[in-house]
Image (cartoon, rainbow, N blue to C red; front, side, top):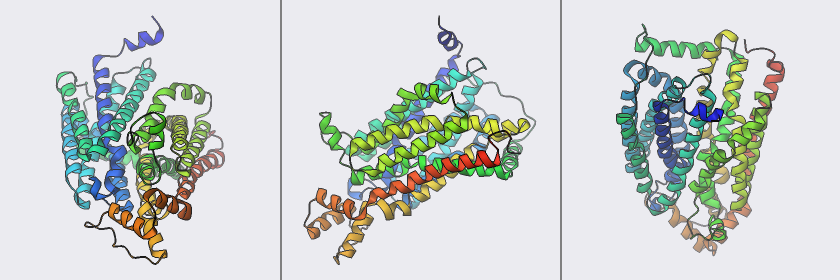
Length: 475
């Protein structure tokens, strides 16, 4: 038997149960999440909500930021009351959140519903990651977390791929898919999940939370480390445009039926969520190959190179209306992600003071939270002014001295675009090309790629001048 086969046999049943629950949770989450920006901003007569890009950025950015901050509290809750109880609470909150997001149509209620989904995710995330850690050893940890990462990306591919078909039929089907998929996890938690042993603690729940916040404060009060966290926040700002801006850019400017025609598929088969799901698909295919290359280099060099590659991917994703070029961009983006993201924790482990490694490792989520907050802002007004189709169309209408009723609850984006076609004397494709040629929405790549390139350069300067080539810690 091979060494890998021997390692695989050493995993307990609860390890596999935890990974399966992760797969279904990610299926439900990414099936919804990859299409969420579209749902928030597309025309109301398509079943979407017709919100502005600013409103979209505020909802997704704020909620996703909380998703990464709240595990400080939810992890302490799980340790106190038990993993199984918190998992049941998480799945129930997920079901309620998906139902509410798909039911409400006002800005305030949708915002609140997404916060509820963030709470559900924050309840789930530390438990499953903790279970992988508890059910692996020094011998099996590398393979165990590799399996976990595969499960994340399998779910991240299947969910959006299916959602890409469903939302064209009825948006309610997307939320129904997420409800059903997350509800499947009730079967695993009730019948197959075994509560792990928990270390007894003399501290109360509030004391545990207080300790967690105190540790974060100790780590982040080190200005050198805080600077590193902010630099990595820039990386996550650029990375998150895959979900915040790219689906909308595809929907507004790219004729994805050109891919469908080449593949012999019916019109409308290839959609924005289908394209974004390919990021996870490429990771499933190529992660081992990319890891085998990046492991030969220092973490910092791999991170810098990966972030630069990701920035190149963003250029291809937003530069042209050619869907095949954009698909190549997603592939490049995925390679950049695989080269940089896994090295984040390793680098923190290297620069942390020897007696504070665990403390510093417990704060890496702050960079991801900052990235989501900034990504929400960047994908709001800046994206709207530079690349939103209807903003640019309203600008063209004004410059032509024409008059069209503003988009509102009673006058949809579709109606506005149809009226503009009449006034400009163009069909839909001609008007879209006119806006592309005259207002250059592709320039948004400069902003997104620029953020990634800046993060890579700042990392180089940080390591060279503050840490002097990693010879020192951040103390």
